[in-house]
Image (tube, rainbow, N blue to C red; front, side, top):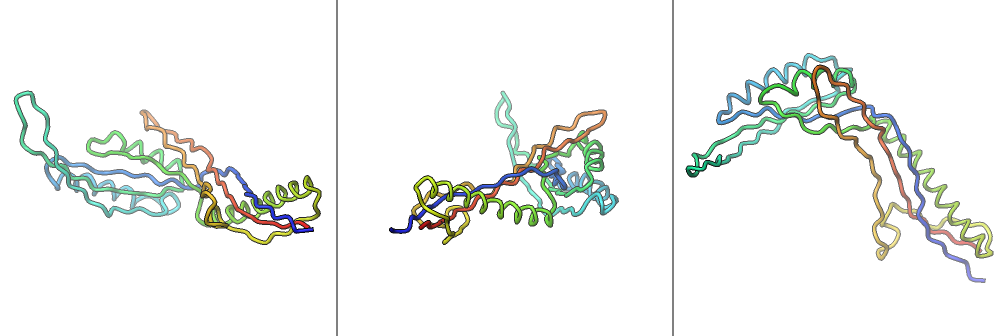
Length: 211
């Protein structure tokens, strides 16, 4: 009897508490570069003064200058310019993050962007390794169920691949995802952030044969 070839996709999914948060801010100054720098300096000093256990890293390496022309019913007004200096910081202490945003969110000339939540880098590698093993086990169980239903014996894996790589003519599967919870908007008198769990989802494509 010809061996039965079975191709399946295995998946594994789990939730983990957020361990780090990356927040983006920009110091804006209308018409003059000096105004933006005056905002960026105390912002950088605040981040530098926080304990390394609260802020694992921060950077300020992007400068944007853009122009616009305000509308006027009497006709076009002169061209105006804005300067924005971007600041990005990664927090591992969420209480300190809340306090930091409390200090700066309402500051004139400072714009707070979205906050991206994630697990730590070392834990991410460990979590993903565990989920990959579970995805292979899921694929094996599916293949064995098909083989049993077809009256065949035990299955043997002959190919394993990341989604979309098993064959060229298969549609690409959804890649591994890490869902980031959006940061709540800061509100006085005090801000308390409650991040959603990080969802890690892994998929594997597998080909088996059953005698």
